[in-house]
Structure formats: structure tokens, C-alpha cells
Length: 215
Image: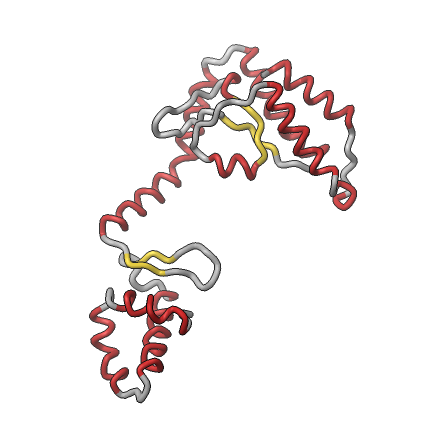
């Protein structure tokens, strides 16, 4: 619901809905107080938006309440639709790129990629950390897409990989990758007892040794 603090912004917003306002003006004129009339209009617009009205004319922010609503042009609407389509098909494109690349892998390439994936899973299993196998040069980067190959892989925490998205980052050196993993585990050790996680240095040493062999 749009509150009184948003009345100035509301005046700009409602100007985008002349038909709606035309119907509401008699009601507003009947009000003794202008502010009360604006609140009533705000309530009706908010209710209409909640039911999905004006989908082609407005953009509702994804932030927590109060959510911001702004008018969008037909061009912006078409761009949003295309962006949503691209997001939907991106996993299919990514899977197809990986599938084609794997077909040309040597046995050693397959082993190296499988090791990256296994190490990521075992960091989760033994240390409770969500590591993912990331392509340092993203497969779907629009300007310089990377390849699915062992030389393009690194381990990133899920939260960092999500922020990286389709950006290209310089690949970690072996020392940088080791320091990154050790820093994450050191931070995790501060709360490990609360999550019933037993930190085992021998396991970490073994995983880092395996990572060195395939990086």
C-alpha cells in the first residue's frame, strides 16, 4: 500500500493513468480534504497493481516494502520481456556449450573437471561451505565468452559466484585459490561448533593437494 510519505511520487505516478483518474475525479471532488482524496486514489491504484493491472505500463521494484513503482515505456517493456526470455534459456545454452565441449575432452580433461566438481562437493560435506565450480571467463559472457575447459575452472563460494554471474574475472592462481579456500574455512571455523562441523586440517590438506594436481 502506498503511504502518505509517497504522495509527491504518487502525483507523478497517477499522471500515467488518465483513464483511471477521469473516473476517480468525481469521487475526489466530493472529498472535503484533498489529502484524503489522494489516499483513496492511492489505495485503488495499489489494489489494481496487486491484481496485475497495468503490467505493460509499470515496473514494480523487487525490494522489500514499500515497493517502488515506476512507469515504463513500450520499448522498456519489450526489453524486459527479452531479458526474461534470455534468463530462461541461459541454462539450456550453458548446458549445450558444456555438452559439446565434453565430447572433445581427453580422458585427462574429464578427470580434471570431475576432480574440480568432487572437491567442491567435499568442501561442502566436510566444512559446510557452498563452493561451486566457476568458469573464470563466463560461458555466456556477451563480449568474450569463455570455454568449458579445466584451464578455465576455479572454485568460488556460491554467494560470490552469484554476484560474478556472466562477468569475466581473472582466474585464480594456485596460490590465490588456496588462500581463498583457506580464508573461507578459517571464517567458518569461528562458528563451526554451532553447526556441529568438525574442522579437519588433514582433509583440507588432501583436498588442496588434489586441487594442485588438476589446476
